[in-house]
Amino acid sequence: MTRVAAIDCGTNSIRLLIADVDRATGKLSDLVRTMRVVRLGEGIDSTGEFSQGALTRTYAACDEYAALLSEYSNPPLRIVATSATRDAGNRAEFVAGVKSRLGVEPDVIPGAEEAELSFLGAVRGLPQGLLTEPVLVVDIGGGSTEFVLGDGLPSHSISVNIGCVRMTERHLHSDPPSTQEIDLVEADLADALATVASTVPVGEARTLVGVAGSVTTVAAMALDLAEYDPARLHGAVVTRDEVERVTGLLLAMTREQRAKLPFMHEGRVDVIAGGAMVLRALMRAFDQQEVIASETDILDGIVYRLASLSA
Image 1 (cartoon, one colour):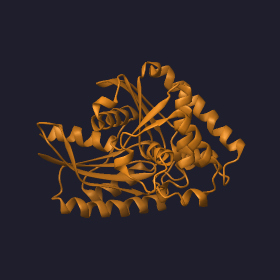
Image 2: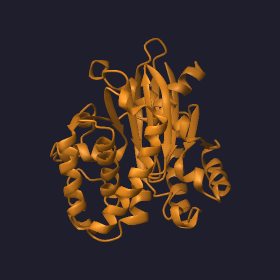
Image 3: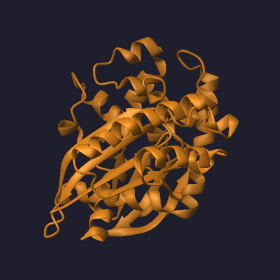
Image 4: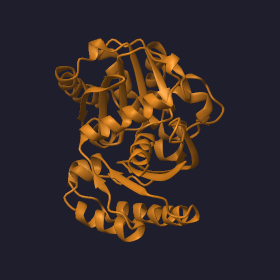
């Protein structure tokens, strides 16, 4: 067994996975899988820099993760930073702050690598009988969304700046959002998805897999869960009609109403409608009739890749 750890530092959340990977079977066994919503990318779409408040919240999570890693004898660790960090003018300050707390410098990876790692984690983590190839994996993040198509291995990928935080901060300011605000989001999404379709042959996809909190929260609402249940959500199949219904409901709700949903993480209350809109738009644009929700994602991909290098 190889013990490794991964941290994914995105626009909305910072997540830690410590796992044992069986070298013979490739099976991954979680020891710690946890998330803190720090909203690192708060305001970055308009300012181009991390705010001091966002950095403070992120550093506090890093201190907490350092203690957890110490409990597990500090296994080999890779830290990956994605959309918000790629965009930040003061990312050197962020990189230095994280390294001083965790002893490892975060890798600010390009969208192509982010997509590849998301594909690896999602596809290896789902029952193979559930997937018909080619598979299109969509990772709806806070600042960006990655699209990667593959048949066993990734063949085409692209990252576009249409994440749930970015869309919310850019347009969804009313409570609930106004028709005009929704139209502005849809226009941005249409432009970005046209770029995706010109780069990735999305029409070849036989299975759509969605990863990250926007997708799993939409699935939780579609399933009418009494609480957020990763075991129920992993591999859940949600139809396009259900995505349409849930997105419409979320857009009609106030913040207070969304916060009362029993499966809703407090860090997603403000941005879930924007994330649901991304999912709805891509299913419409690419004529996908269902999406499979996956609880395994880029974190798992980082761990698989790190374990193979550590073996």
